[in-house]
Image (cartoon, rainbow, N blue to C red; front, side, top):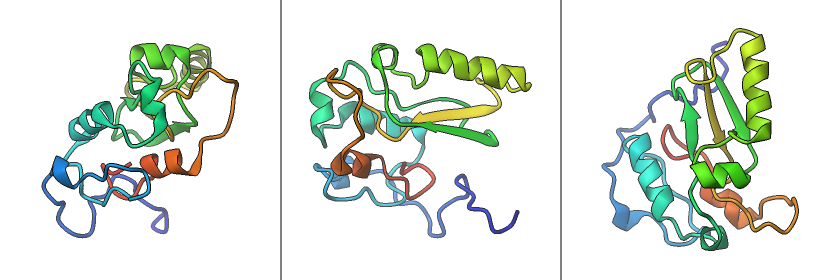
Length: 147
């Protein structure tokens, strides 16, 4: 168990106070560890984000739902229509099925699970496709609140 990566461990160096001026404007530049003091700061940045073309088509940003300190984390690819409308990941048909599956093994999705997507904005409705490298760069996780 000790060789497992702890996604919720604090970064090895003290976090840098949030500074929106140092958040890169394009997806070509990574967001540095320690950029976000907490999830509220991450959500605020995601709501302002215009780092890739997905921001042109979204209604809401679907960042996360559930308990960020839960032992179980589910990571999806990207939001669909219901997620774009609500601003929450996995709330459409796939999310409802996920919640039923989790419930069937005794997990409460609001308490025992943390859910988020690799990409937080809904891609244009042009069929299902894989996220581009620049879109994945925006969602790259490198610190406790840098994902």
